[in-house]
Amino acid sequence: AGLSGPAVKYTALANVRQMRQQLKPEIDVVGVGGIESGTDAFLFLLCGATAVQVGTCHWKEGPKCFDRICDELKQVLSEKGYSSVQNCIGKLKPWSKEGAALTRAAKKKQSN
Image 1 (spheres, rainbow, N blue to C red):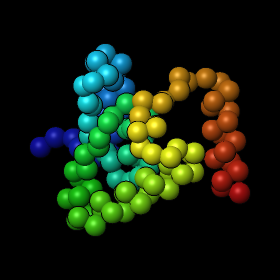
Image 2 (cartoon, helix red, strand yellow):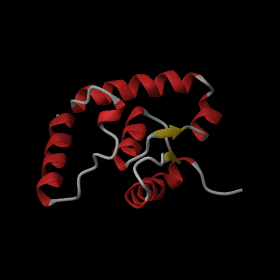
Image 3 (cartoon, rainbow, N blue to C red):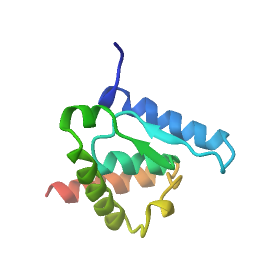
């Protein structure tokens, strides 16, 4: 037994980011670990994954999770202004005070 699913998501995201930065661009990186939604898939793509794998969610929810995650990913891409998955791969911006402030403001606006 070991850790999987949401318990490993943030470590997996960091690993994908590091691998993308260290490998040649022609080498694909597959994001695995804690993908349960379109937003999760989007985060892995931003970190540099060229594909994602869904495991625990499929085990818990069954094959219907794939259509749901794809639909959610399409929605996130549209909301963020991306016309395709390829356009968002590796586009994670470095942390900044300004970016953090924009994120907090957007979340606050969304909750109102």
